[in-house]
Length: 396
Ligand code: TGC
Ligand code: FAD
Image 1 (tube, helix red, strand yellow):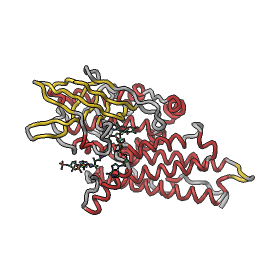
Image 2 (tube, helix red, strand yellow; image 1 turned 120 degrees about the vertical axis):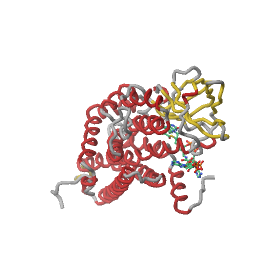
Image 3 (spheres, helix red, strand yellow; image 1 turned 60 degrees about the vertical axis):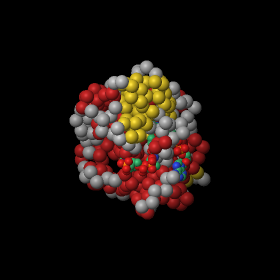
């Protein structure tokens, strides 16, 4: 069927009419922003292992993308589907950019919005929505990643203050953050529990040494977060979060963004590869004209489209207030696992060019290795789904 106008992988699935006009317009705005302001610089940021987080945060804030699905406090109050589609476009550029936005909006801002006092909300949310203040989220510790219930960071009461001690690890935005949401073990009237604290990062005893030598998510800031006798007032505790359900409910928000985001990385790989194979001449004809190529492209388009249908369904459920954590796990597991497989397969079709920064494919593949691990590893999400299917928790 030579001569037919090629269709885009997602165009093939006819998903456009599953998205409302307003949500589509937001997606287009984000796509244009990444094309104008981000894509031209990505290879260089990735190569040098840097990202101008402060400048980007202000631009993202002025577009209303920070905490965009939250309401009030200068947040944009969009639909969950619009938030997902924004994540898709951000991650089509780079997972590091989507991470910046996820951690700001879904983890740090959401924690304050959902569990904070009115004073905490008024102090932080408008500035964070504008990108004038950057947040990070400290849950993981060196010895407790998949199992945060074991955390050792401790908050003890001293007069009118709380004093925090401990080390958090792998903290996105850590060294550029103005405020950290720190989850710590403590004892209250009800006994031992986990509480969240809003900690200004310029507090005495708080430091965030950057983690360098990363081979993945290079256009993203990752740090330790060291708390040595950090003293904060009683009002720094998030009053409405007690127990592990506090931080885990924040993770639902960020994992939901990844359901869409990872598909953006996959779409970028696949579109790049289709274009490449149509152009690349091998044994006197385009690489796209070989059956072996088309079998790969067809299978990848199928997985991308299936992932998109699932993501949009989860968006509908979230907008209706009916999305359950195990459904988020289904989506996170599927999107990231398939996106990584697509990125690796695309890499093969680009041959040697595929290993360079001249094309986005291996950058996406490397990034997706982090996305597969953070916000719950693939195995953790399999176990969450397994628990939903059987009623048995098999984590420990
Ligand atoms: P478990 O006993 O199952 O639950 C403890 C309490 O939490 C409740 N709960 C949830 N609540 C809301 N949302 C969820 N998804 C929830 N999952 C559980 C549960 O009902 C219970 O409540 P209650 O009231 O009875 O106390 O907890 P567990 O200790 O057995 O652990 C379960 C497990 C393994 C699923 C959980 O620990 C887990 O999800 N581990 C993965 C940790 C993780 O994802 N860390 C991510 C760190 S942040 C990050 O990676 C940011 S990267 C961001 C970026 O750059 O984009
Ligand atoms: P481990 O928990 O040690 O897991 C090692 C292996 O064991 C994995 O394959 C895992 O699936 C498997 N495993 C674990 N439990 C089980 C089980 N019960 N059964 C079978 N297998 C199991 N954390 C934050 O708090 N804030 C952040 O901003 C943040 N940003 C991050 C940014 C990057 C770039 C990265 C890489 C990580 C980030 N993290 C962050 C940490 C991330 O959430 C953890 O890395 C993740 O939760 C996994 O923990 P771990 O690395 O300690 O792996």
